[in-house]
Length: 145
Length: 434
Image (cartoon, rainbow over all chains, first blue to last red; front, side):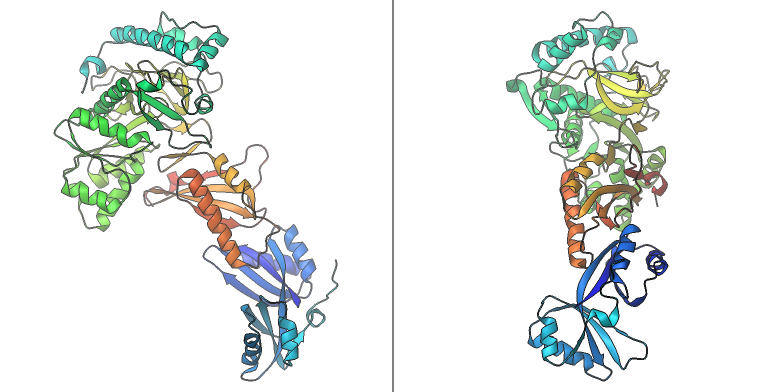
């Protein structure tokens, strides 16, 4: 499991820019970002190199941020790569709440992020030979500053 | 004029009548209501006056006094003589109950018949009563006045705007009674339905229960082709029928043979001369069920000096321009921001920091309550955030009895102020007619 930053944002112009600038000023590097929105507000999900620091910076700046545990899986760059992963989860009756993907520069595989409702999921995926990646590959896990 | 023998009586005769009635009322409340006995004794005043001016020595009655007497503590007549109760339209927590004897109901009908006559009403008219019927005084108050006048009375009550328009057209309504904002909604709805209201029999409207502007009057008059008359009342004093504009539309004649009006300085609470602004204070001098002595309305107005060309000798109160405390009126319902605070304090996941944005969509008041999400919320759960939003909306709506929108905002994003927080942002005047 890795930690994802989830940030509550009101729908107003320039607000996403303001939030990302706050992170940039704190030296936080973003790897992936996904916006989920409703009519009235949005939730921005972020994979970054220093999630704990990012949360603290955002809290201090008055944003609403929380850390969410999600699964990161390396998916081979070929047709059916994602479908294979999802089928494993389906067999184990693990429900996927949301998913998104990003590609690391120069990598031969994409990284997919899954929010699931079942703590067994990482073990299930690994047992099926999937490449579940831990925090060390994506960020500084013991980041305490 | 429905009762020219009173409405146009000479001032001297009126004052004599007022003193007689006032003394009867003071004696009545002193003998029957523990609150007044204690308050008069405490102030060292005796319930017997030589002139109206002596009333200034008497203590005020506050909304809180009525509230703490809930439900019947302020009644000056035994319950066996009370034939009906109503209650205030909305308050902080505790509603206030007002009781009417048969004589009170009878007087009230006269007052509302006067009001409808002020709008040009006669027995030949068809009055559509679109105020709500029930504990709210509006519906039944206008209803009895309309019947007293002998008009054909349509007790349609509020809501279902398309049906209102249909009835307006099919029944041949000539006088419409509702809140001013609802009058505009009826006009807009008729337009959408392809019904030309201006071509209908409608000729006048008696509009009240919320403050409205001259600008809004012009809009209503243009869209409905009516004479729009401002009426005033409050349940603590009577309900509708305390004061009404006449065809001159320049100030509301106070029914001074039943209600004494004083304007007092908001700070010193001393009476101010006619023409000067201050808080409106009413004393009822004929009511039996629940008379009030020097009741502070919190409404700000003034007496318009001089005589009115209409022939009524009752003094005129200028239309209400503001409230002396933070109560807001939304679509005719009284709302206190502290009620919202109370609701939020009981909901986990939100901070008790909020702001109320009042606006206008067309002619209707809109209310957006902005509420801060608590900092320790799990922000990843959109469904839970939406459920929270729905819960806040539902709880505020049931507390206020007004439909609202809720917008969740970020922690600490609502401006904090030192001292009195700016809880209400009223954009209605700017957005009117947009």
